Length: 267
Image (cartoon, rainbow, N blue to C red; front, top):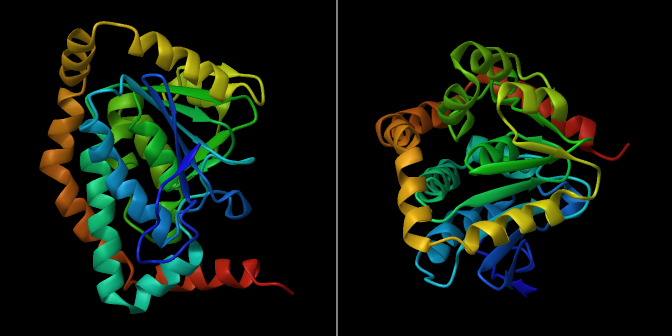
């Protein structure tokens, strides 16, 4: 297991782990004590890793998972709090968000999500931009952007209508309700449900099968299948993220975030 270096935002340099297993690369979000919420170091690394993997001719498939009991708890609350007052930081993080979406949806090889636990906010977005989603039976999706007071711009608002249909996407993104694994499978947000603890092994098996297929046919077929998604990203993402950026100035968001931080604080 190789550790990727962190960003200037701090961190141990262990926030994202990359393991090479033949032609498969296993990416592990590695902040288990924080449910793999994206702090500055992890968010920054996620913005860069996809272009690096795309440039590696030895990569045939990618697996994305989380360490510990969660896939990803979304954005780190302390980072979100800093973004309400530090507009320079806010601009940097939102530029990274754009990079994550643009680069992840442009990766030429298949990406398999091993959703080993809750996938919330950014976690939902990351899973929805993968090509195959393997979900453990106890896992769930939830996108609370709108309920918190933010525009849902960094993935779900673009991908869910293509995966679930427009009406279902509106319901679950606007209300932010939890989607248990079985329901996620039913409406098109997951491909397979597996017992607890088996998502990574299943995802790696699928990745190895994909990596063994003829490279040119896999890459070109994935590009064809992703055409509608890429068109949505190219036409909508920048404006959507600009609107999400404005959300940080809204009193409703700031009040909701303050309440979440109070609940998190030790008593």
